[in-house]
Length: 221
Image (cartoon, rainbow, N blue to C red; front, side):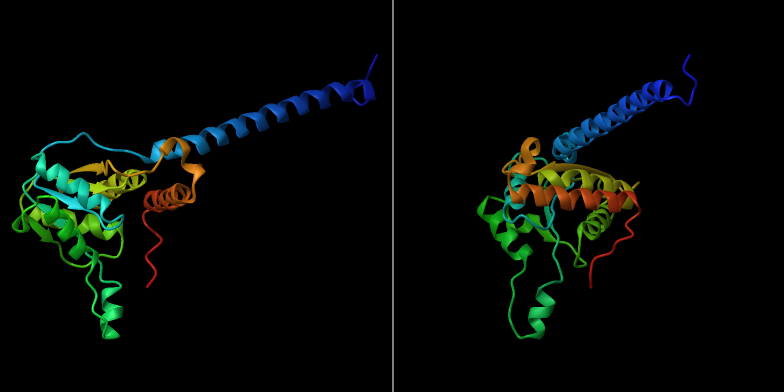
């Protein structure tokens, strides 16, 4: 009869332990693969379209976001288009005596080209540094306009972070309808296939984590 410390008794225990470790490792690997392949789709979080006081073109991905804003304007979703503008690199270039037309200038030209009247386009103040700033500026403008909703136009991978930031920074200041530019080439189901999409996913995942943590990381000065 085998005692608990004999080789005959130890071998089955080792086999069971090994099976448990393999099962845990396999489950962990499966979960990691599910997260890896699904994160691109998870980042895309659009809201149903509805009427709003204005369409806000978030900074970046020019002219794609402005083109989408013009399309929504033509379809009658809002009577105005609001643009944000960044302090940089204009301030640094101005110190060097180099004139610089900011992104808001070119977005204005795109909007006018696409049929948005100049009088319907407004550049919001103050200047912004990041998406959190844009959310605050848009929420303040909505409050001043005594409106109920704005449509925030961004790109696909950026939608979840924009929605999260609005809930954290502009709760109770009106509704944000977050929409992605229809011309965005981001492929959420195969984001790992090119560097552009992969960098978007890495940046957005880190941004979402920062927002969840209460924005402890601030823009570099």
